[in-house]
Length: 126
Image (cartoon, rainbow, N blue to C red; front, side):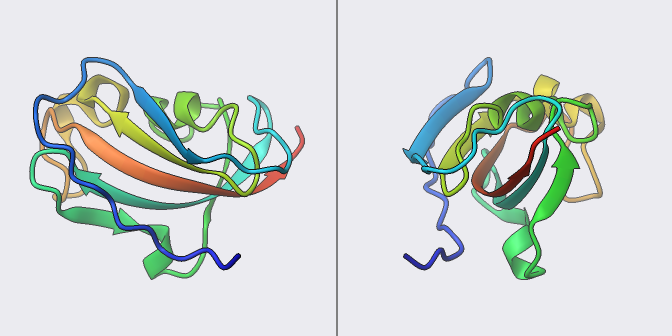
């Protein structure tokens, strides 16, 4: 099965108060746990506008980071844990688990809820 950049469905309605995790499909590889180094391909869109603000797919390289180490937003540290390699998961991340009231990089507004579709492409056990 070839994996392609996902389209992110725009949910509408009120954003959730806490992290919302939905498996689009479950992988069958290693399970990601805190302390592991993970490789994640992702698309990020604004909950309010549905506009894409970032995607690793556009760079052709997944993001590699130590899971649970605070190197990424909290919603990712929590939301990627338990994924299996080959899986795709949608995370709806409220601002307090994302960039809060400061926003980020001029593309993410203050207090913005974010939607990410994440593909777990690799796990190196910690």
